[in-house]
Structures are given as C-alpha cells and as structure tokens.
Image 1 (cartoon, rainbow, N blue to C red):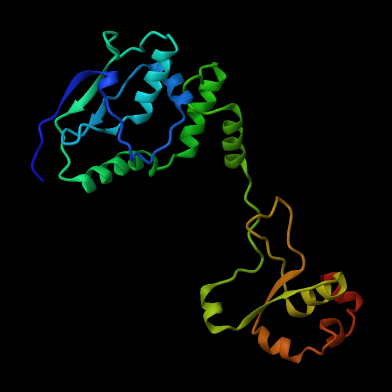
Image 2 (cartoon, rainbow, N blue to C red; image 1 turned 90 degrees about the vertical axis):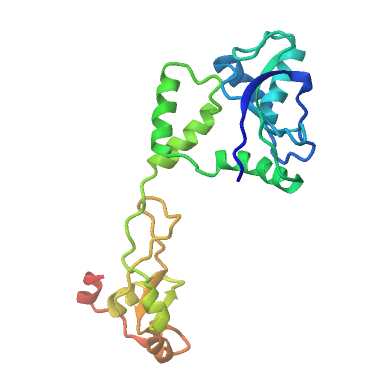
Length: 241
C-alpha cells in the first residue's frame, strides 16, 4: 500500500462532514462529560477523497451539543470557529474501502475487551476519591463488575463428564423424582450430585447423576424404576449414603 503523508490541521467544526452511512451509535452525553473533564485528546480522521469523516462522529456531535448549549470549547479545540484537530491526507481507494475503514476504526476500539481486575482497581480508586465523572461507568455498573469478580465458583462436580465417555456412549444421566430412589442410586450405583454452571455456593442438583456403562443398567431396570429394581437399603448401606 502506498504511504500517505498525513498531518493535523485545525478545521472549523461546521466544515467537518459526517459520513451519512456511519453505523456507529454514540452516547453523546457521556462524550460531553469526557470532553468537559479531559478535553479533546484525539484528532478526528477525514477521508481526503470523499471529504467525509471516517472516525470521530460522536466527538463532533458532542462538540456541536456543547457549542449550541452555550458552553466554552473544551481544551484542545481552537475557540476561533470551534476549530477541531483533524488528521488530513489519508484517502480511501474507493467507497468500499471507505466503508471498511469506517467500521474498522470503530470496531478495533471495542474488540479487545477489558482486564476486569485491572479495570476494577482503577474504578474503585476513582470511586473512593470521588472522581468518576466523565469516565463512563455508573455506580450500578461498577457494582455489577464487583459482583461478577467476587462470585465464588461452585465446588467441582463429583462426577466429571468427559469427551471420551461421550464418544463411547458408555454413560447415562439419571434424573430422580423422589429422595428414596435418589438415595438408593447413590449407594448402589455410586452416583454423585452434579453442580451446574449456574449453581449458587453450596447448591447442587440432587436429582442428577452419572452411571458409567449405564446403558446396561437402564436396560435392566423394570418399568417401576430403580426403587423396584433393588431392595430397600439396609442400615449399613443407609449409613454409607
């Protein structure tokens, strides 16, 4: 790709033309809050071939909101005509490439995600000193982040389902509708409770269990179920359960 010489030029806000096909939506109020606190930190990008914005639609809209509301321009904006720092000199080859850049410059900022622990450390500190304004996270959102990070994983399942067992089809999962059959199956068949991915701490799905080579067990069960297939547990077996 041919190297394109770019530079930053201050351009009147009203001369910056948004791309009519821009698919990105913006929280203008959030951007305004950020501009008020931090100023205009990053130049917008204009496609020299089309004269349209490629990156910076939300920030330009926020600037118009501030100006029309009678505010002073934030730092980084030249007050003479609300001149905005703009990267100029980049040109798309055609409309398809212009559209691709429009998506890519927005998508690349959101695709990486966050390191939640590092993010929480910063937000907790800013919350502690009362300096969350303009950051973009509400108290409720921070609480949800804390709750997610503080979640205690359920204890590991007593029975582990493996891909190899699935391929050989030598296990079955049993669901019991009464405590007596479940208790009998735990002792006689060696079943263990299964902890679901959404289980709360200390909670287990008591009616579920796995039997290796379980197909033969199921085929041997009478219609009345496991309670009819086995005699009631004696005292010693009951104690083991």
